[in-house]
Length: 114
Ligand code: 5GP
Image (cartoon, rainbow, N blue to C red; front, side):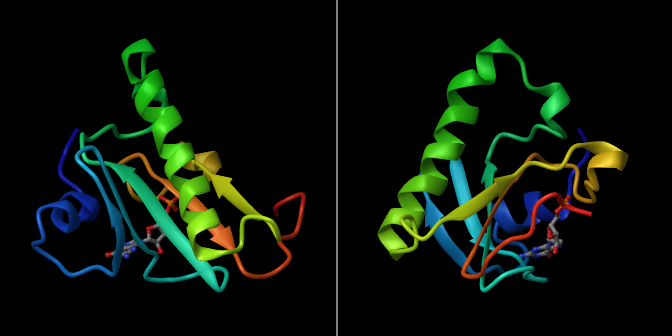
């Protein structure tokens, strides 16, 4: 896959409000938040979309979700609730082609989405 803005954030070439990091995952606040809490959890290893993930990525995908839940617990909004979203390609509304999980919280979230 080609480089994206998220690759630049991983390499610290552009700034981001980073809230969590380990050897394979980075999480930072979305620049255009859709809720009081809007954090993006990304693998450092670039995968363009969920379609590119294979069996070898199952653990990584699970750990991305667990990182979201851990963050929600740590920040104290896990019990009140939150939403995780992965947008894929055009109909999913994906605009940055480096796989990411949106973590949204801090207000009631509408369902179904528009
Ligand atoms: P997508 O539409 O691909 O699911 O989500 C991409 C998200 O990345 C959007 O919510 C957008 O606001 C966010 N975003 C795009 N560029 C930047 C950036 O340079 N920094 C940060 N922190 N978020 C970004």
